[in-house]
Amino acid sequence: MGFKVAVVGATGNVGRELLDILAERRFPVSEVVALASSRSLGTEVSFGDKVLKCKNLDTYDFKDVDICLMSAGGSVSKDWSPRIAAQNCVVIDNSSQWRYDSDVPLIVPEVNADAIVGFRKKNIIANPNCSTAQLVVALKPLHDFAKITRVVVSTYQSVSGAGKEAMDELFQQTRAVFVSDSVETKKFPKRIAFNLIPQIDVFMEDGFTKEEWKMMAETKKILDPKIRLTATCVRVPVFISHSESVNVEFENPITVEEARNILREAPGVLVIDKHEAGGYITPHEAAGEDATYISRIREDATVENGLAFWCVADNLRKGAALNAVQIAEVLINRKLITAKAG
Image 1 (tube, rainbow, N blue to C red):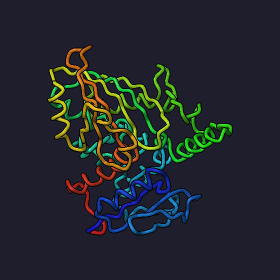
Image 2: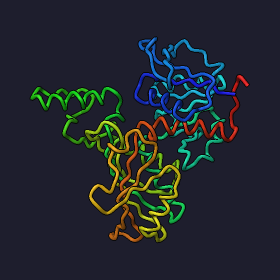
Image 3: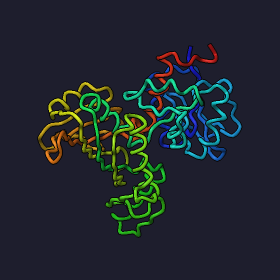
Image 4: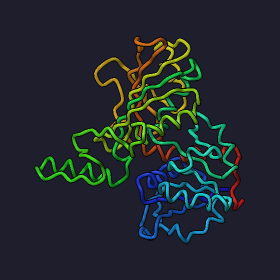
């Protein structure tokens, strides 16, 4: 028996990716419903070889829906997720709205799948921030082996993390530079074409941005509250895939070779680490792929038990849509939910 799945925010970057991944992974659906705001009513989106017309979220009845994949932003999720969950439909939310709620599990299946049982408290499961998701997939097996005490991470995040308008802005600014037109800035605080912006989300009182705070808070909730983490998040002129430079300190000794072997065996990880020109993964190569790629693994001799590595993943897939679908698969595989039609 298949499950009826609703995708909220189906016309957005992540919403379209959710539909693609449900089809790619042959998710056991009886029906998929594409939902969006009233202004997108009737917009067509693809689901495998089918075309779905978007229905209006405001008027949709979720009483026969089993799983709702929510990707419509925090304010929509705040309003709608509890109402949908109250109709015995499990909500898997991609916004930051529920991540820090103690009654809502924050899940990366390769890292803390067992925590999913807590979803029954509110019938809501949170998807982590895109930059956090790939980081904890890499950190988990290393933490199990040598116990991480501190992480310093600098991110190089693609514009797709800020939505379709951000991708359009990078394209339009790049074209304007080439034809010597004026460069217009709308979505970002400064020009993004051929530039870097050391700000993602708003600034907080301590000088960190909200994106940096999210990485700190979410890593603690998902992996270990004792881990100290500091982040610098940078927007770069790349369309898809986030990259991270990661420095890790451990309580116990760990060699480069041990780390490389551990990561090679880790779920969701692919190690591409050759000490030669091009022997590493770039964001362009990671786009459209499911894995979290690890390269440039090396010892940090400036601290005791230190390692550094390069981490790249498609932020629309593992950072968002793929992780959400994997959460839904855990619910089904562990028989934590049954189809209403069944």
